[in-house]
Image 1: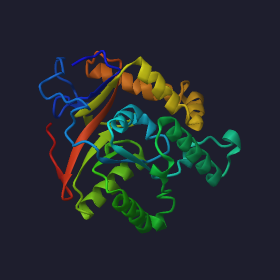
Image 2: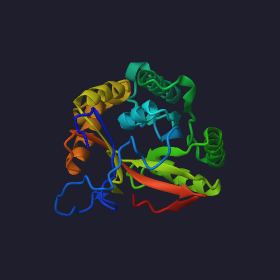
Image 3: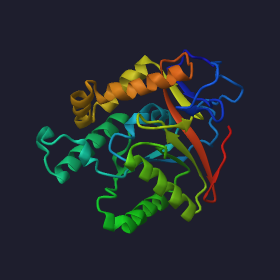
Amino acid sequence: MNFGKRLLGIIFDRPGQTVGAARPAPRRLLTPMARSLLDPPWPQHLRVLVLAPHPDDFDAIGVSLRQLQQQGHALHLAVLTGGANGVDDGFEGATGTEQKVALREAEQRASCAFFGLPAERCRFLRLWQHAADAAQDDERLRAHLRAVQPQLVFLPHGNDSNATHRRTHERFHALAARERLTLWACLNQDAKTLQMRRDLYTAFDDELARWKGQLLRHHRSQQQRNLRTRGHGFDARVLQLNRDAAAALELDAPYAEVFELARYADGALQTCSG
């Protein structure tokens, strides 16, 4: 594989290797099973749906999504919640829930414009605001899945300490079974992911890391909140996760976005071994 390329592609890791689990003695991971994003397990020109629990989750896997868009796949983004709890009270004058949701949605629209995602392919569903609306929220998510009819879905892993990430995974899994969907799903590694298989990854270099940092900094509220609570920005937090992933996989590239691959056939979850 030519590691001189700026984007090194999605590659299969050893099947069953998990993030957070004890690792065997290090060895090179570029096995005959390796797959580039240019030669993925799915066909070309798919409808791709990103199920983002919050505004900014799309951007956390922005390099992979950029590559898919450049390959001709049709990307769609559904932001499931408003993410108001992630905004410091009074940030840019936002105090109430509606103001904070409007601020975060504006940040996401700005990042999507920078990314190059058409505005009509970005939807804000505002789910799970009230427990009494759970059935209605499920129906709205179901309707959106039916409208997009995705063949490839990106979403968080279910083994995650964030409750909204877990709920996104749980509701998608239930709807996939209910609707008897046949599609691929990529479960992305997040800073709050507890354990997952490393089936796929997108490796990238410093130039693309700078681009991704710009993308992430469109989420000004999250940049400021991370600076206040952690002493470093949202951009630095995500890119450090990507740097750690590349190091764990012993890549020549400095950064990687990591995914667990799932395959649904007629609503049933299949075993993916590469």
